[in-house]
Length: 323
Ligand code: XIL
Image (cartoon, rainbow, N blue to C red; front, side, top):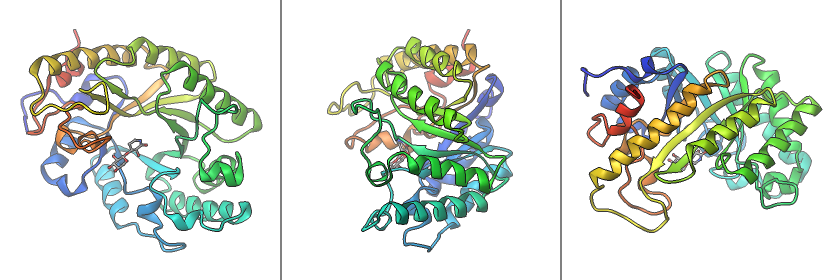
């Protein structure tokens, strides 16, 4: 890795995190992470399918390794995620009535949050629960269909009991789009009014090179600031594609320069809003490990700050040296 460039974490007024999406690459990627980032989110290892593949059989070896890596390097660790409709084994929902499902949830949440008490500072307690196209703004997941809003209430209550010091977040994508923003806003407002122990809102921010404008991101941060919740950017990346079908054999250099401008605009917003935003996490440290090389189709993508050879991209310089 380059050792003659500034550590990115020293150039921003908030925690700068990265997801660790490919633990098998931890060697040299670990050096890059340790040098530039002071936050880390295990990309898959704390999800339900990884931690409780069969009822009551917990598996923590992978999660522990990544959490320990983060702690050894003085990083703030984000726990992702306790209740989601994706990457959740079928047994969780199979034949479950409301009471059974909430018991499974309670056991899962209590076990994970207790294990990492004092180690994981922030949990994405629920992930992607909003659907702005539903009349009540809530995604019709198995969680919702079986329990209504009670899975959210239960997950937060139990997480708070298990570690009262952990910050508890609702996390979602597309929160920069007005309709989704309002649906999430209404949900958080309602749950807070009920006394559900929600500390914050996570904005995933999976963006592309053109959309949405940075001003929409700023509007979202300002909107949630009026609710008095903490906010974090949790999964930032900037795809070089604007659709779900195109693909390049090599990414044009102009596009990488343009992406740099995009990162600069975004980080200008984050810096301006630093009073409301204490952490920004990118979803991977370098282009070779990004999930966007396989989602929504297999194609070469380059959405992050470092390239496949772990060299600084224009996007890195846009963050490190925004003037
Ligand atoms: C992604 C991981 O990066 C991939 O490795 C996995 O195959 C699918 O999930 N929103 C989220 C993350 O909340 O958990 C997702 O992570 C990316 C979208």
